Length: 254
Image 1 (cartoon, rainbow, N blue to C red):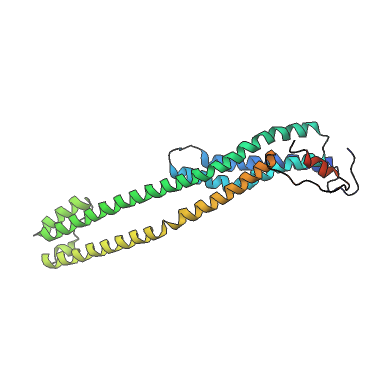
Image 2 (cartoon, one colour):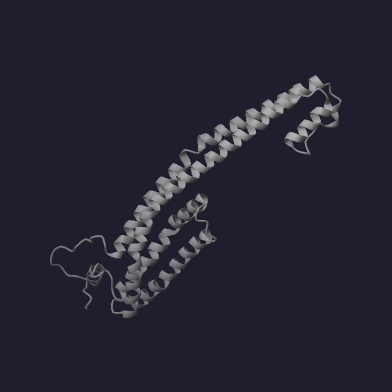
C-alpha cells in the first residue's frame, strides 16, 4: 500500500510503537481502579454495587482510549502483523464491553432503588425506635415520685451511665420532672428536624446520579460498539485520492 501526498496519517513505526505501549497502560490503570472498589466482592450489597458502577463509569474513558489507541497505532504501521493480531484480539472484546455498559443502566437503576428502599426502611425503624424510647422516657419522668426511682428508670431506659447529677438530686422532684420533660421535648424536636432533612435530600440525589450513569453508560456503549465494527462508518464519497488512513480505517469494519 502506498501513501498518497494528501494522507493525514503518514507511516510512522515509532509513533505506532508509542501508541501501542500507551494502550495497555491505560487499560491497566482502568482495571486497577475498578479492582480497588470491586474487591472484596459484596454482590448483594447495593452500596457496593453503586460504588462499583460509579467507578467503572468514572474511569471508562481510560478503557475507551486504551482500546482506541490500538487501531490508531495500526494506522501508523499497517504492515505490523503482531500489532494487527493484538488489535483483532482486543476488538473481539469490544462488543461484550458495549453490551456490559448497556447492562449497567438497569443495574444502576435497580441498585439505586434498592439502596433507597433500604435506607428508607432503616430510617423508619430508627425513627420508630427513637419515638418509642422518648415515649417511655416521658412515662418514666411522669410516674417517678422520688429521685431514686427516677434514677433507676433512667438507667434502665438509657443505660447504666445515665442518671441524675448531684445537683439534680438536690432539686425538688416536681422541678426536676419539668426540666427533664423539656429536655425530652427538645430531643424529640431535633429528631423530627433531622428526619425531615434526610427525607428532603434522599429523592433527588439517587435520581440525578442514575441519570448521569445512564447517559454515560449509553455513550460508552456506543463508543465500544463502534470499535467493535457493529455500527456503520461514514463512507468516502467521490473519486479523490485515498490516503493510508482512509484505506486502513475502512478495513476496521471487515
